[in-house]
Length: 338
Image (cartoon, rainbow, N blue to C red; front, side):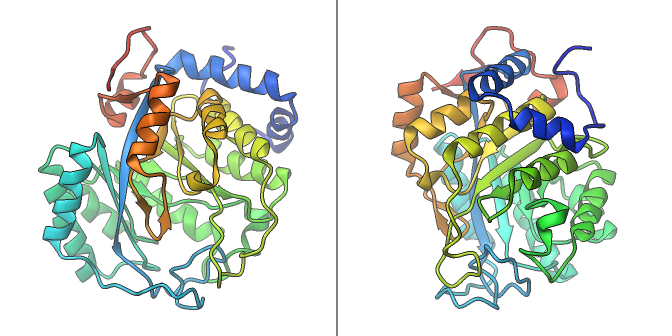
């Protein structure tokens, strides 16, 4: 069996063994897998907009948008359509191929969902891929999003099932899996990953990766977030994660899900250029681009461009969806602009 063949039968001990490898051996293996399926010098770029901020009924311990946490966040209603289109147009001009929209809901009402449907259709009209994260969905709501032409639905597992109850109590790990099942059943691409640095153990990180890798189909996008500590949230003051542990997790995600896009998401402001470069070497090949990620800072666009230029990395020209459909075998030719 080729060492990067797609599998859905990983056990916890195998994944822990990967995380325990000497750092150089692990990164070399991950980079070798990465080169079998992707251009190693190409980055897929997405932009994320918060279309409805604050007042969420959930109690996620990391989140500034929970109505249960006193973070000083200014609450906002669902944005009007013209503001969303304006932001998407700006993102497209900046090189983003996908526009992601996030709403702080436990689950959307059907009325709110119809307003989001209008946004999806408008953004697709600009020639961009669309992604939304709206909380839990019913099967019928997932079907409506598919009818609207939605490309991706984001619903992170966040952490291991064993650690989950220490972070969130208002919904279960199984609730998250059910939403992913509805999304996949309707033929929408899945974006699902987790958050590191919440006080979890290495075994917890292995367990989270096992849940993702053993889904019936791997998520097309796997965002790996580094906890952004926000004063007023229960996880504020948590011991910071060793940067090499974050890179190790990126590398193992690449090995377990060789054809998925592994995205550096929240927490990039906490990473220096060297750490980000190691993440790219370990198999990360997607980033959120722009100044904000929902309610937290993101590296400014000019800073990103400078880093990518220093690394010889270019924006991916073709879309992530096309790459997944074609298997995205590395041909040795750059498929990016820049």
